Amino acid sequence: MSYSVITPYRMSDDPGDQKSVNAGDGFILKAVMKLLEPYQCEHIFSSRVTLSHEDISKINSTQMLVLAGANQLNDNFSVIPEFNCTDLEKIKVPIVPMGIGIHGDKGKNNRMSDETRSIMAFIHRRSKWSSWRCPLTMDYLLKNLPEMSDHFLLTGCPVMFLGEHGEHVPLSEHQPRTVVVTTTTRNEFWQRETQTIDFVHKTFPNARKILSQHQAPRKVKTRKRIKGLLKGNLEHLHTPVALSAYAKRRGFGIFHSGEAEDFLNLYRNADLHIGSRLHAHLFCLSLRKSSFLTYVDERMAGFSQLLQFPICDPARLDDYMNFDFNICWQNIEAVKPTMDRFVSYLKDELLVKHDLSESNDRETD
Image 1 (cartoon, rainbow, N blue to C red):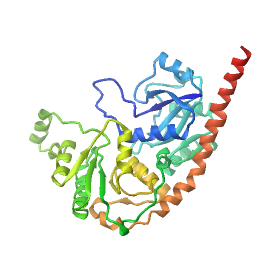
Image 2: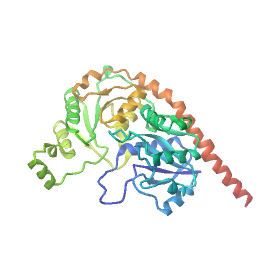
Image 3: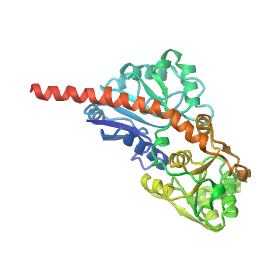
Image 4: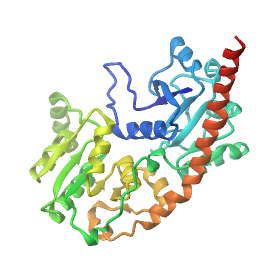
């Protein structure tokens, strides 16, 4: 009665890997595991690291392999780094995408490679359905794989169904006691994130204000910063660490943890979320809390199209504060039956049937 998971939340053990763990990926993993209860996740592997023979044996000892969400779908998607169909054939159990979305960055979702098309066909020979998280992802799949359209279900992200529903209180009816701001510190982030921090500082002076860091900020080496400044690159002054200091000067506490559950508890106890972390936004919406998302890339656009929330301009955040979130709740409820149908398929056809087969084998023995 178990399955395996591949997730970007599990990081590489390579000390040279510059990426840090992302709490949002942990939200997805927790949401997947909650949806699949009472079945248990037996083994968890990283989508960033190739599988060993021992890893594949562990996967084959379970009933299926779930690919747990995030923005993994791109033109060269291969499930596991450096894998092809021949490698995937060593995995004997169904491989099931669950809540995966397009990459979102420019140039990553132009035209699916022939290898990726073959991998997608291989996956769906063993599984009737796969789960995809937004309309832009579905558009990409249908454009590149129209012959497989019956296999693709638009389910939304599992995080949309993770929170325990509370009673929504519009901002017009109360002053938030705790406001959480999330930041995404990649590419040209400084103006977007400082505008959000300044807005919260000015608009909610009496609230407890927290800067939530889904990924721990990496310090830029002093030598590298000096070289950049000498070349006239002022971005070397605008580092993630500098952004934390900027928020502290405006009365923010800084929150970071290595555990996704700590972040979930932070949002459970917040009255308002504003920022650029998509899965903080989705989790707050699942809790029926007010949450405002600023634009980073097309991942936001896909969910905005699905749930009909605004993608906010950080230069005029005040314009959005009276947004009626009821349309979001309605759209979450509208897509939920599709997620329920997909989860029931996994439990009733992929997990249970394997269990019954194993039980019969034991009785025969």
